[in-house]
Image (cartoon, rainbow, N blue to C red; front, side):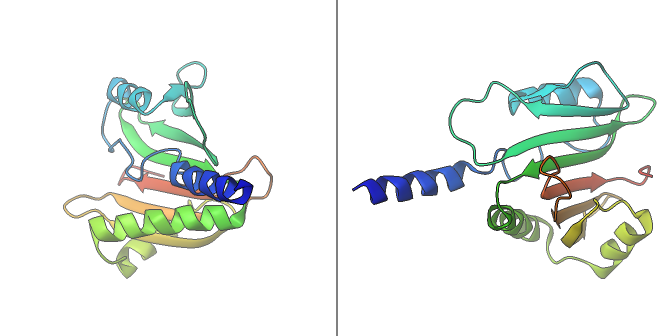
Length: 172
């Protein structure tokens, strides 16, 4: 009986492991007010005072979560979003790989096959997270937005091991 409870708890925990939904609730070009409202809806709070590169940490969360997640949003001078990074940290490489696979499956369903052209564009940007071991890249149809998902081998226990990024034409 005890083993069943542990296995059920593990299964529920893994289902809840996606600290955030599979879809990023933001898009490039949104203003800071829209971003903060959308992230607050997803239980993220601004970390400290307003900055050009702003962190939003999980807040007010009840229940079990397997890993941690946070957003880093880069704003332009007009306070519009020019890059979105969702960082996630999981306790094991296996958990991180499972999350990465879920994100890749969702993006593949939503955006189709990864394109070599989008992968080349990411290489030119040269902004992959340190320690990236696997990545997939899509170009969102009808826009200059690149959507990349990285599986990362963290250097420290504080580093993320899954990173999803929306890059725009102004990103650099």
